[in-house]
Image 1 (spheres, rainbow, N blue to C red):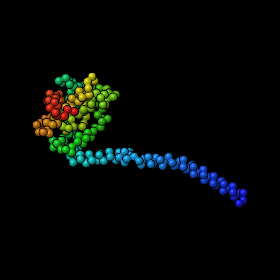
Image 2: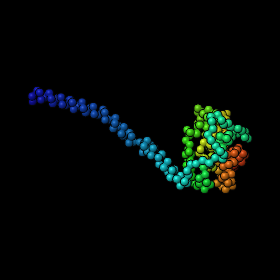
Image 3: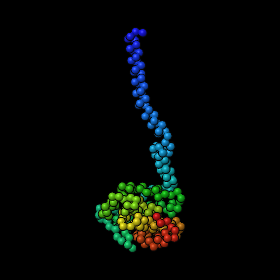
Amino acid sequence: MRRGSSSILLFLIVAAIVLYFFWSSTSAPNRQIDRTFQSYPAESRPEHRRSEGTRREERMQAECSQFGITCSSEYFGSWQQPMDGACATTLSHGYPVPDLRCTPGGIDPRVTVDVLSNRAWRTGCIRNCQTSEAEKHITYRWYGIRVPRRNYGESQVCELDHLVPLELGGADGLGNIWPECGPLAVALDERYFKIKDRVENYLADEVKSGRMPLATAQRGIASDWTQYLDAANRYCAAGGRCD
């Protein structure tokens, strides 16, 4: 073999070896990543979680569509959006109630007793359907209340509350929303918005059982939710829904 030919052959062999090691070093991690990803259970993969969330939302939309809810608000008084600082809570039976000029309360007229009693009904069908959670925050300004910095879990001190609750067909418009805050120096389940939850649960059971007309419960809780505290506490003590 000629010297020139042997030199070319040697060069080709060396180049092949170099290319082989380069390919191995770059493709091995990718193959490992592929094997690692494939080893995850299907239900834990990100695209599966997204599709599960989408399917749940679609199921809820399908369930809600049967009720023909248009997400409208009818208030128990004339209402226009207040100026910042124009509203103030007052006390009734030692608990805060909203300024009825700013928060008269109201209902979604399509949510009837039959709707509320239907097992397929969910308050999620109308929650944030007319005003978003972010839009509801404007009510803090109306009442001159600073938004709490850590307002979640055991540290939650305020709730943007539907005066007439959604479980009683309450409206999702801003005339039915107020910031219910305090007190700090008590356990979470003794804060005002948690105590009002007991009243809401009591009234919802009264309405669904036929012991109280829906309109009576709606107007009653809008005018002064604290008037039902004693009855709600008895209901809770007797094994009713307390939270």
